[in-house]
Structure formats: C-alpha cells, structure tokens
Amino acid sequence: MWLWAGIIGVWLWSGMKDIPPLIKAQQWKALMLHLLLAAVFTAGSLTYIYLNDPPNPLLWIDAVFSPYSKAIYSLLS
Image 1: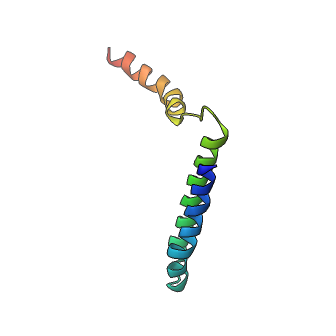
Image 2 (image 1 turned 30 degrees about the horizontal axis):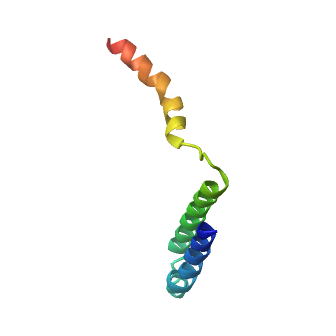
C-alpha cells in the first residue's frame, strides 16, 4: 500500500514540477529520457511489490561472463 502511494506520489510530483518546464522549453529528448527513467523505476518498484524474491541481474551477468573468465584464466595459468 505504501509503495503504491509512493509511486503515485512521485508520478504526480514529477508531472507538476519537472515535466511542464521541459515542455515549455521544448526539450523533447530530456522529456523522453525523464519519462523512460520514470517508467523503468516504476517497473522496478512494481517488481519489488509483486515478487517476494526479485531477480538479481548480477547472477545473469555472471552467467554470461563466467565462461570467458574461466577460459582466460585457464590460458594464463
């Protein structure tokens, strides 16, 4: 419940304080970046709300680079 209130509050605050100056100055790239980051962080918050054990991206990075690091280590030893 409190996380929902926080998400809605951040979107409202952003909509009132950050977005109108960007539209007035016609800074469309900055506006799109702002909205993209807000959407990414909202998705992360929703993942935290609905999943008790959210996925760890460090494990995915380890799975991708582990064979390369083992191969290089075996070549150097």
